[in-house]
Length: 194
Image 1 (cartoon, helix red, strand yellow):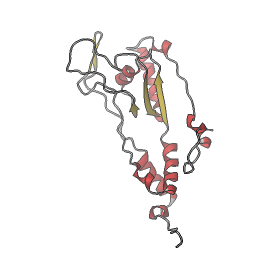
Image 2: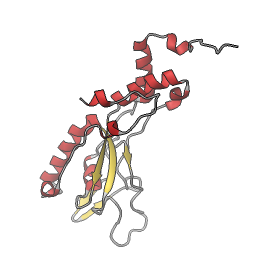
Image 3: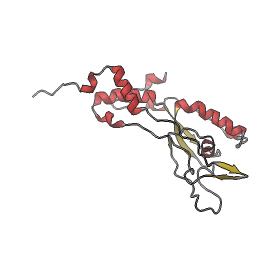
Image 4: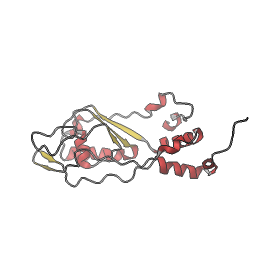
């Protein structure tokens, strides 16, 4: 018996419509988080409401189920997803209170490697955790928000975090994944980083 070569019904749609569907399903991050209402500084103390103990993280509305439909759809959707969602990994090696800066100016963070930082009900001793220290940390954000990030770092240097720019070193690595070997069903990203 010969294998069935029927085309999946979704693939009969024009490519432009399929691309719009892929973008809607795989590239939707919703609105940026709203500024925390109970974030303020009194003297040398920073005060948070109980639910404001970590940087706000964007909520993802991504539905990846379509990637499991078949290999052709996966290839098309993967291509759309990687060329639309350009992510940037921000890593601090320490010496910069990056959590505090980002929380203070409410950046749109897609993912943070850190956990909630303090128990506001304790009320004793000095608060500890990523918002209050200068330990290394990592964030992932959309590349389209890099301008906002640089403006945020400028605001921080001009106001609460004086002298921040003297410690700040930013290095950019474009296309770090293009050197890795991709599976046969994924298109190469090499031409994307020209």
